[in-house]
Image 1 (cartoon, rainbow, N blue to C red):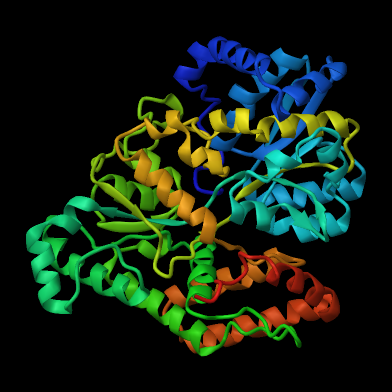
Image 2: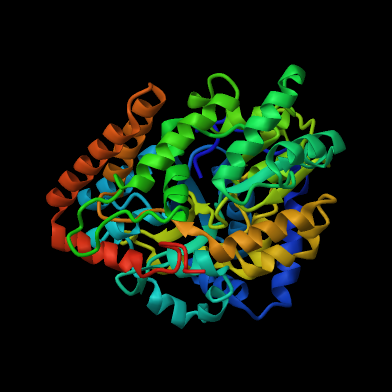
Length: 492
């Protein structure tokens, strides 16, 4: 996920991992010795490639600390295969992969991709189909144990497996339990609105609760809500909210854009109106600014990615790599819930793939099977600094994770619910072009332009992109996306 600065100051090695990496390797070796599953098979098969170096593309910053400091060193110790990490800012990853493939450069063996890019990358031929490897190395059963919404939406393009879901990115709601439980707040809210002060289940409630709490708590410097409103991120909030409110992106027959429906106008207008009870300047808030606001106790609720839940609890606050994260003033006071509508956005996400131009495809495959396996992924998602979030059903009931902080059970339980009802980002040919139109639209919205004029213009731009791609070609891709369970909320 793109949430943190793309590069850390220097190369920060987390203190705990520097001290204990040999212990961790020994622990993995011990567990593998008793294991007959996918991780063990990958290690044993990979030993024949000892001495080679696998080059992997990974998002720059905290994400890359996993292969640099954890999985890479352990893999080399177990197999003799070295791991070279090429850090790439997320905004450049798609173009880097495509340019390398088209030039025949063969620079990467493993690529870390955003799932919404799969149609583009697979159709271009940049990714290696993985089905034959999955069956050869007995991984299909473990793949079935990936949480439903990631498994069913992020793995397959054109009927083939191209990637393993590897990061449970999903937007959930965080709220201050102490503020919501305060008797004075509860009584005043019930008297004004006639219902209980509780985590909002609808966007109407979100607006009422946020506005009420700002009015009541602003003298203390606390706002009713804050959010990631920078246009690059606001478009994911729009994708979620638009669909929860009943919107459809396209007419499936004509492929005419439908985002300028009354629902689209309503969502834009309401999002701008909500900024009134959020902190000044919220329109430019990226992940870090919003995190600081919530961690400092200055907002009563927010919607964001899973790391907020861990860091707000003070989890691993002594890690050197997390020194830029403000110390939490709300540890023990944070509750977790699904956002209004109950179908949260699987915003961005990460999946592991093999580059089709790799000279070591089998070795690359074995590495990602090992990383993604039940055994190893359970350890990777508990690393406090790498932004890898739970994505397997077993992660949500992992006893070690459940014991990390007092409310970890509620946190993991909410992520589990999100993993069952989440909505997959729009995924088309040239997805980035459609998203760019959304981003530009939000820049105009925050500048005060008319919501109806904005969505009409966005729809026009979408139609032009569809025409350039080819209506029939795009219709086929959209139809495949629309058939996935995470495309639109199921009728309830």
